[in-house]
Every structure is written in structure tokens, then in C-alpha cells.
Amino acid sequence: PFLPRPQKLKGMVGDKGFDPLGLSDWVPVEWLRESELKHGRVCMLAVVGWLTVDAGIHFPGEKYTGIDALHAHDAMLASGNMGVMLLFAAVAELTSMVSVVQAAKGSGREAGDFGLDPLEFCGNPDTKKFMLEAETTHARLAMLGFSGLCTQSALLESHTFPYLS
Image (cartoon, rainbow, N blue to C red; front, side):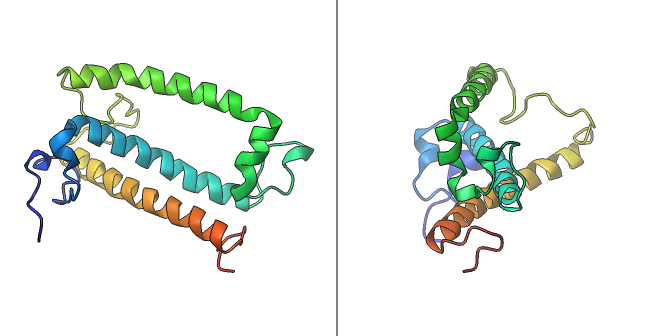
């Protein structure tokens, strides 16, 4: 109510008229949208991964026994597994950048669309609009939720769900 509505966001999926830093004036909206979806999808997976580890599901082997999600990064780094994970992440990132750069050049590709819809959820335009809006909402919630999950686990030194004390 006290800030001007960002004009470049009109018609974008998930537009709530919220851009307090004015990033959409500096950075192409397609890049911002792609970034939001990528970070949101990673956070959705991260929440599941965090809760899975704290539920007691780990990699096989003695060296992973008794590790909670808060300390899993350090344990994976010490064991040398983070280098392999970094390699896989780098390959995925470089592969996806081809599509992102083509979209920036005007290929018409929508942000986050990698042509993967084997169950044809988005065949109907109304269903597609609903699914894109739902993904954006869930991605934003996951980004906030994951940061809260990490913070509460670290601050309260409670390493088991529900992280209360």
C-alpha cells in the first residue's frame, strides 16, 4: 500500500505486487522468475531431506550413524562426499543454463519450464495456470520454511522433529 506497484511484474505467475527493493527494475524479470523457481524447488527438496535425516534415514555405513541434519554437511565434507555432490550440482546447473540463456535471448521458453511433464498435468490451460501458481506459492513457502527449520534447529540445539526444545 505504501510502495508503487512494480509494472514489470504484471501478468507474471505469482504476482502479488511485492518488490520492495525494486529488483524487477534492475534485473530482467525472466531471470528473477527462473531464480525464484530454482531456489524454491531446491528448498522443497531440502525440507524433505532435512526431515528425512532427522527421522533417522541415512546413507548406509557406520560413519553416518547418529548424524542429525544440522551436522550432516560437516560429516559429508569430512568423508569426502561433498565433492561428488558438488560435481553433480555443477553438471545440473550448467545443463540448465543452456535453456535459461536461450530464454533470455527470446526463445519463448517460460521460466522453470524444462519440458518435463510426463503425466501431462499442464495439458489444459486452466490447469496449467493453477499448477504454476501453486508451485510458486509452495516454492515461496519452502524457502521461508527451510530457513526457519535450520534456524530453529541451530538456535534451540534441538536436533529432532518438532525442534521445540
